[in-house]
Length: 339
Ligand code: NDP
Image 1 (tube, helix red, strand yellow):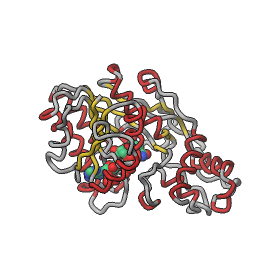
Image 2: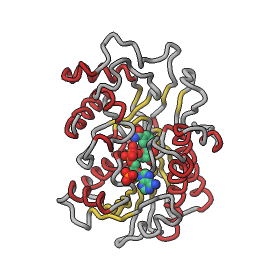
Image 3: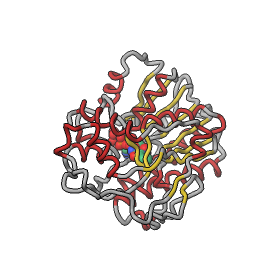
């Protein structure tokens, strides 16, 4: 399949690109600079231009940002849209978080409808943020699934950077489903909603300063940032980036994935379990970790929400990686960058 992958320099997209190339697809990926394109090209030097090519899209929030990127010869049959800001280093939440997510998503769908009628499937990386109700806390009596939508309003999303990120994912996913309903394009849509994504960082990363947001928790432990106490667990659900990458490609390939939203959660975790795994597997970091007697970061006494990931398992056929393997592989990959 001829595929357009957005945000190819990102943590998740790097893994999506690996799966696409391994499975023989022909990929054009958007990046923000030639320098990023060159790095990715170098990491995949055995693939020719027909299998891997680049298109520069500096800012997905700009009107018409994808107008050129969606045009290709041979034409695209599928688009995987992962690009979007996931960090909290912002001064203007509307411009830096909400706009790129929402306008970027609506924008690419508009460009596809206008200029790439051969595209039959669009896959979008949404988030558990678009599912979970942030006003319900641990909500032990509730089971989250694809039918849930975060009830946050735009006004609430402006309250702080964490809410703005949450809102950016919610409104972007809603905009995508609304677009399909109203515009009736040639393509069908599939969205993937992962919670905390952990997993190996890859060769494109040259410094830990550029480490993606979700892996910063693991990095924080091995760097000794939480030596004095395990921080409270914020989200109790996680998924492995390699499973998620495969999920994107399967959601693109499988006809029956069209029109579906996938709650892409492998299972539960706590920060306490994470530290226990690092302590057991990497004794060399023990003097940087909170001690085994530290009771922080555990499940709350009342329990937490449940998860129903059956649609992801059944339709996509995903077998989730165990948490311990993910954490061990992630720490090993951080070592190669310089922990
Ligand atoms: P990264 O920060 O590693 O990747 C984000 C990608 O989006 C980068 O390639 C980045 O480019 C690009 N990007 C961000 N803003 C813009 C913009 N305004 N214009 C053009 N490109 C932009 O994060 P992840 O890989 O973790 O995130 C990928 C997607 O997955 C996001 O949509 C995120 O919301 C979603 N997600 C992530 C989760 C996680 O735990 N990691 C959980 C749930 C969803 P550059 O690096 O050049 O700035």
